Image (cartoon, rainbow, N blue to C red; front, side, top):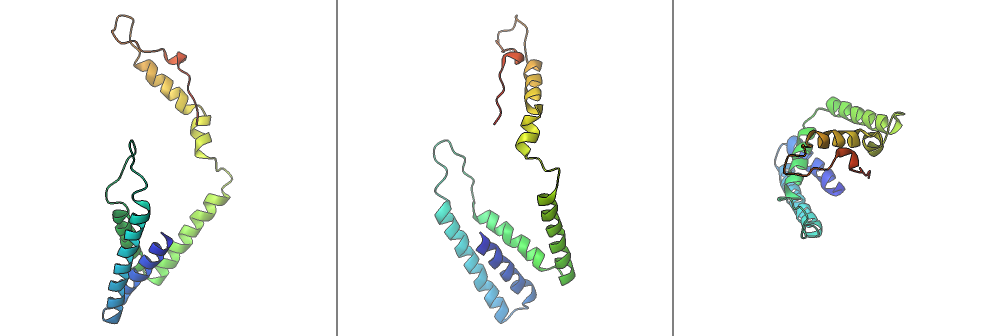
Length: 148
């Protein structure tokens, strides 16, 4: 995928700033190479999933590859100052993510805090029926909640 992303950016720069002629032909050849990479990804990874009981998604990896190329094409149309600001902004986000002192793994924040368990018990108790109803719904306090 890294090669697909790098080549997508190079081809997008050639197409948007090349002007045509030789650069346009090189950009067209680059698009053919991108299609070949997407086909290789499909051939290597596409048939290993989707067995019985598994979910398969149509148009993978072709549709995501088209979306990646379109995003790189739009980014390649930025001026140099805009591209520099984008790099600084993304770098700041990465630094903030890794150096943030309040970073808590999501699994501990949601499940460890008991929020999911209490919400599930409230939901089950709201659906509880009286003894006269035909359905036998267990009491929400009798259900043991497990965490991942």
